[in-house]
Amino acid sequence: MTYIITPLHHNVMNEAALYIDTLTKPKGSLGRLEELAIQLAGITGTLKPDLSPATLVFAADHGITEENVSTATKEVTAQMVINMLNGGAAISVFSKCIAAPITVIDVGVDALLNDPRLVSKKVRPHGTANFTKERAMTLEEAKQAVEIGITSAKDAITKGARCLIIGEVGISNTTPSSAILASILNIDPATVVGRGTGITNTQLKRKINVCKEGLALHKPNNENGFDLLCAVGGLEIAAMAGAIIGGAQSNIPVLLDGFICTVAACIAELLAPNVNDYTILSHQSVEIGHKIAADHLRKQPLVELQLCLGEGTGSAIAYPILKAAHAMLTTMATFSTAAINYE
Ligand SMILES: Cc1cc2ncn([C@H]3O[C@H](COP(=O)(O)O)[C@@H](O)[C@H]3O)c2cc1C
Ligand SMILES: O=C(O)c1cccnc1
Image (cartoon, rainbow, N blue to C red):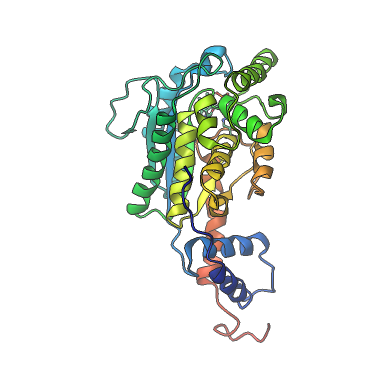
C-alpha cells in the first residue's frame, strides 16, 4: 500500500525564484531563506501561502521499556501527557511562543487517561509489545496508527493549520527509532543507537543488543514501512509518519523535529513517495542517529542548539525562521515598488 502525494508545483517554484530576485536585496543574499521560500511555494502552489502553525504531539508506550533502555519508567509517558495538557512541558511553552495550538493524541499510552483535553485514539491500550519477544504490533494496528496520524493532520488543517509541527512523547522511543533506522540503512545498530534521555554505558550496550535481537528475530523487509513498524514499533512513530503524509497530501509544509520524528519521516518516505519534498528539518539533535537519518533524507537542519528532547521542541523553535522566509516572499518590496535602481 502506498499513499499518493503529488509532486511539488515546479512551475510555481520557478516563478518564486524569479520573483525573489526582484526583491530589494542582492541576489541570493538571504541564503537558505530563499531556498525555503521556493520550497514553500512549491509545496503550497502559491507565492502568497498562509503559514499558520499547529502542533500535533503523538503519545504512546513501548514494551521494550521493560529491557531498561531509558532513564525513565513507563509511567512518565502518561505524566508528561498531562504536563503537556496543563501547559508545563517544553513543547507547551514553545508552541505558545509561536501561537501554535497544541493537540495531544494518545495512540497507545499504557494508562487510563480520562482527560477531555486529550484526543484518545488508543490503538493498543498498553502500547507496543516487547520486540525482543514478539512483534511490536500487528499490521492492522500499524495501518490504524498511520491512519490516525493522517486524520489528525487533516483535522488540524480543517481548523486552519497551514504548517505542521509534529512531536511525540513515549518513554524508550529512541530504541525503536534506532532499530528502524539501522534496518533501513542496513547498518549495525551500534552506529545509530545513542543515549536518548542519558542512559549509562551498561544500558547503552543493552539498547544496542535489543535492537540487534529484535531485527534478527523479526527480519523486517526494510523497504516496507509497515513491516518495520510491525516488527519494532512504535505506535506514535507510525502516527507521526501518518501526520507527515497527511500534511503533504494537503499541500502543507511539515517541520521535522529530532531523531524520532526524522525516523518517522523515513517511514513516511517508504509509504509515500514524494513526501520528503514536503518536509523541513528544524534542528540537529544531539542523538547520534539523527544526523544519519537526516543525511538519508538529504535534509540540512535550520538550527543546531544541542537539543535532545523531542516533543516537537526543535520545530517550534525553528518555526520563526520559516516564518522569516515566508515574510520575505509575501511582504518584501520589489525594486520596482520601492523605486530602487538596482537589478
Ligand atoms: C521527563 C521527560 C520528558 C520528555 N519529553 C520528551 N522526552 C523524550 O524522551 C523519550 C525518549 O528517550 P528514551 O528513549 O531515552 O526514553 C521520549 O519520551 C521523548 O519524547 C522526555 C523524556 C523524559 C524523561
Ligand atoms: O532527538 C530527539 O528527538 C530525542 C533525543 C533524545 C530523547 N528524546 C528525543
